[in-house]
Amino acid sequence: AQSVTQLGSHVSVSEGALVLLRCNYSSSVPPYLFWYVQYPNQGLQLLLKYTSAATLVKGINGFEAEFKKSETSFHLTKPSAHMSDAAEYFCAVSSGGYQKVTFGIGTKLQVIP
Amino acid sequence: KAGVTQTPRYLIKTRGQQVTLSCSPISGHRSVSWYQQTPGQGLQFLFEYFSETQRNKGNFPGRFSGRQFSNSRSEMNVSTLELGDSALYLCASSPTEEETQYFGPGTRLLVL
Image (cartoon, each protein chain N blue to C red):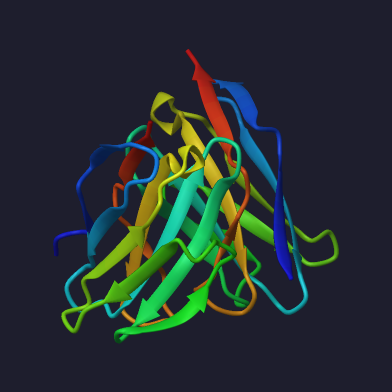
């Protein structure tokens, strides 16, 4: 069984501030972990993925995430928020593959000028 | 390369009707997955097809079905529509089952 918990359905940050979106997972086998972003009226775009290689994963648009097995976490960070980062972010897990992915409920990021 | 395309983009149906949604994967991609997105339940996996065979299935009733054609295009069908079927239906494709999925823009279905 696998599951994902995203802490905070809405997060607000000021432009230029640190972005931190929290994700905790549960998986009975070594997981694959993903962060996706969804802009209004669009599909999901992959930001980054962890597939058992380096624990610090760098993605697109300046985002990165760190896999911490002891904490079962995969938090998403970006040093400096831009207005264009305002979107909904989804953490996802799959048990050792790319299919049958379980998504978190999503976190809407608001960037305040 | 063109991305994943889904048709139609918007659809309005009434309870009891059936609906067919279409997904054209990225050229060369053979795996297609379908997801349902609702405000209350979030994103839920429906099913996944690879080379015309259903490989994985989520926890949805039998009213939800799908198929994949030899050119990798996929359709999903929902019969006897219920109000709760109103959702954004997303299709994702990947070259194989062991590679990253790329999502289409979705079909927004409204059941009245």
